[in-house]
Image (cartoon, rainbow, N blue to C red; front, side):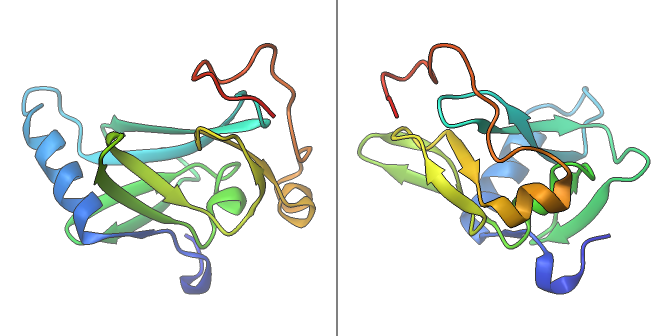
Length: 140
């Protein structure tokens, strides 16, 4: 379990949208939001958000505003202190992750390079080069 000072937080807007999306899939058996970090994107890492049936061995579990979130042990150091929000802006609506562990981010906001101390704690490089880019027309 993440320590309280390392916990990921979820805004009320994000929780409302997550509950709405979960309600749209009543037959699927999903009950948690899984947040993860994956290699890729034009800055090295990218966020992965998706629904899951529940936590797996070793997952960190957080509950906030009636929403259960699980984070795998590899991703946890990269997400520590992050805030997940749902924004409905002129350019479109979607989830936004405000992450204090980001050293540099892609212009489209979907990929990032982690600060060196965070990567060392997770036992990974600060960036994992991807071929191409994030596919949103952004560049380094």
